[in-house]
Length: 357
Image 1: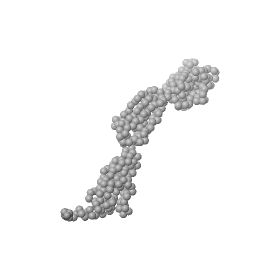
Image 2: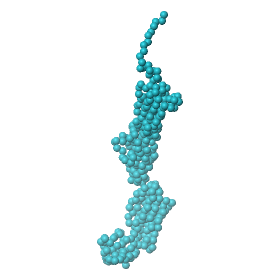
Image 3: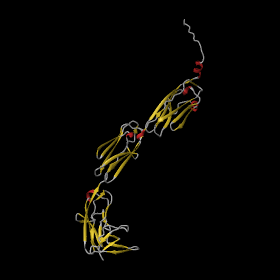
Image 4: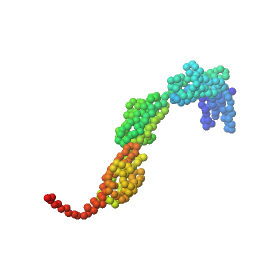
């Protein structure tokens, strides 16, 4: 029986030579792991457990993220290992409810905290014979960024200006702040300006709002611990724009006419209505009112039809277009000549003046 300290796990494909600590015994084609010796032949593997003193390999420096769970495994070698413990500042762990040591010797720390969990931790292993080994390693806790939520004004209109301020209220340096629109980096075509006030504050400014500025804007803050973001939707309300319209000239009673109010631009939902001389419904006689109709052609246009003109149809007709951004109006005048006026226009007559005696 001889002892081998296991340092590396070897596969059958590897060619490796191991030497006993206690003799000149030398073997090739050996497969071994911590605390055991597996001798490989062509057809089978024989396992021999070999006693070995406890040994703990170097514990690398560990960086943990605040708020997350840390799992620290003790890299112990030797067989058989009776007990594995953890210490910190001379106190055996766990020493609070966030810590626990698993049966395999793994130290688990939940909800890691920078102030209380940063430090040097020592792993201690012992075998049945009372032999022990110790090794220490450092744990550093870094804090991820936290962004203070920002909002957008819900009543933003075309041509106005607005800004977003992204403030990182927590997080270890170095902190990097960047901006995205709809998940993509902002470019010169977006017509925005970004000012980094300091390492923890950045301002995105839009001088003149347009429909192109609609979208989701995200502030992204990152450091070695994590990358976090906060998104805010920006909506630019575009008021309606009414295309000019008019009535034809020379209209007389009994004729018919129509005109269309079309909205060339403006956000939905959009409503279109009509006024006559500032009133709705129109102040007309039942007969003239029956000869008047309003039809919605589509979401952006309305048709006013007068099928049998009367003198009382004369007046100012106003199209009113409204959406969440604004209400706009456009007015056209309709002049209907009565029958007598029409008759006189097509006849000639003479007026004679006589002196008064």
